Amino acid sequence: MIKIDKIKINDLLTRGVEEVIEKSKLENKLNEGNQLRVKLGIDPTSPNIHIGRSIPLLKLRDFQELGHKIVLIIGDFTGVIGDTSDKESERPMLTKDQIKKNMEGYILQAGKIININECEIHYNSDWLGKLSYSELGEQADVFSLSDFVARENIKKRLDSGKRVSLRELLYPLMQGYDSVFVKADVELGGTDQRFNLLAGRELQRHYKQVPQDVIMNPLIEGLDGRKMSSSWGNTVNLFDIPNEMYGKIMSLKDEYIIKYFILTTRVDIDTIEKYKKSLEAGVNPRDIKMKLAFELVRFYYSIQEAEKAENYFTNTFSKKEIPLDLVEIKPLNYNIVLVLIESKFVSSKTEARHALEQGSIKINGVNIYDSKAELKIGDTLQKGKRFFIKII
Image 1 (cartoon, one colour):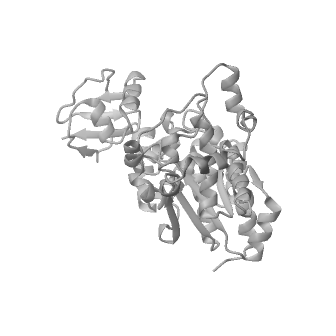
Image 2 (cartoon, helix red, strand yellow):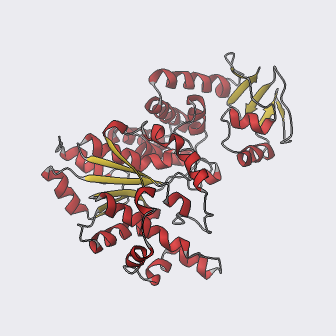
């Protein structure tokens, strides 16, 4: 049943929203009580969904709570091709096996935010893998080369002499055709997706469908201040364990606290405004950041886990103690890089080596820089100031 709630509809169209196409038209549809098909596509280019991607997922949840039909597309085909909308260089193609492995936990992760049981889920290889050359040519004819190269990041690459592959021209067609296939009324995505989102509107017109409305969200900065990206390892992931999620948020730059509240939580705006005024009045940012960290752990886990994570952080960071209740792990392999991955302190060998090089890894309180180091039973492995495990 569709809910017509003007306050929630206004929030839907304004909170964490950079641009709406076409806003008045979409607002009228929402107020008329028509059930809309709201689409979001996610490419499994990494095993983890990070909270940057939670922004449109939360918006998808908002639509779902108003009674609209939400459509989640796992881009197992587009993920192989690769979207370079936000990239300064060509994104390498991934293999089908990499994509298959990456997307194994995607439904579970998305289910932390949306009601999967009431969501329509598709894999776009089901239709994109069946398109013929003639159909692809028909779709490509809708756009000109100048449309594509006028995009800011593509223009920069061309001006600097960097390679732009013809493969990259295909991605907007594929994302756009997803909208045609599922008959989307609304599509969600980040501002870096603008060209692809508009491509969906053009292709729907070509196939005699009503063009979808579009809601674009701003992008969020990662823990190092750059755009949050799995390839940079500056992410807070939905599958991070509570202590790690809490600790990562506490390492966030103070200037992003309010932005994170608005975009990655559903704490009411009035409360967020109070936090903002408190910061402006000189309250220690750490106190407000602890509320943010608590809220995120509570949302993705439980109040109990949030309380445990807060106590853990207070004991290990504020009081500078090694926790008495150390998590114990019996690793499959005692090489430090592999243990860091198995313990989920890092997500890849590259990230592990980077952490070692930066001096953020310790064994029994001593910095370790050697990726070939071996741990022994009884050792305490530490990452940064907050994350500890005991080897058994």
